[in-house]
Amino acid sequence: MASAEWTSWRPLRLAEDVPAGTLAEQMDGGQAFRWSLASDGSWVGVFGRTLAAVRSGPQGLEWRGQKGATHAEGAIRHYLDAEGAQARLSAALPWRSDVVLQSARTAYPGLRILRQDPHEALIGFLCSSNKRILQIRAMVAALAAKLGEPLGGDFHALPSWEAIAHADDAVLRACSLGYRAAYLRGTAKKLLARPRWAEEFGALPTPALLAELRSLPGVGPKVAACVALFGFGRLESFPVDTWVVQALADAYGLRGWKPAQLEQFGKAHFGEAAGLAQQYLFSAIRNGRLTRSEISVPTKPKRPRLRK
DNA sequence: GTCCAGGATTCAG
DNA sequence: CTGAATCATGGA
Image (cartoon, rainbow, N blue to C red):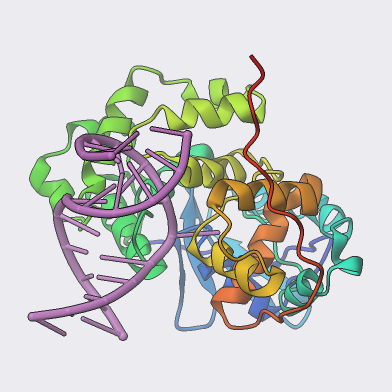
């Protein structure tokens, strides 16, 4: 296909509407790195082999895809959680008794965890360490452009592990990956021998999934938590990054807590959809929209002692 | 030129 | 086990 041919715009009819401000944060706020704002105000991106555009219209969210891509509507509806599973989980978060979470949730109504596939999430967050969101997007875009399958126009799918494993050093270097090139290369070589890794990982309970992810080069606690949350839909996963550390320190009084302790607090305090709460807090603190509170400061947990 | 980034790894204690 | 140094690159 020489260029992308779009269908007409169609309504998405989500279970819960997503206002324009929330949509922007959702597509551009650092959970996925494949969306960009077009000149007409729509968000254009690739997930899997699907090219799609999304915009906020007067009747709610609208989308369009490539002509002939009959699977695209189901794919985009799944990606955006159109059926509303997260709407119910969000409503069940403890925002009624937590004014900080309430303010963050009010700032971004309808905010969702994008349901990325494991491949997209792993590549994105392998590039994420010690980098800003804008630069992560640039790295992932360069990987797709140089090593990914063309999808029409200037759009490309993400590269396969095989393409990454066999790519020239010079090509990877040209993606501005820095030392993360070794992470991608190492993970690619390991997963190349395991073509069903995503299904196999997805069948594991979350602790075992995290352990498998952490066995990959370049995947530590935070990246594993992000891949579990964004790539495997483990909504209970609670990634603790620099922003969440700051949010919990500022708004919850948890100064001096270590990441593992903050993760324990987050899971206990926010419950089964802790990852969704984390995304509200992340977005709010990063955009200066987090209100502080004087809620009682919990006791710092001691590290869990393994019996025996 | 300096500082820092949705951290991970390696090494010293 | 914990904490510090190191990692490559680009933008502020």
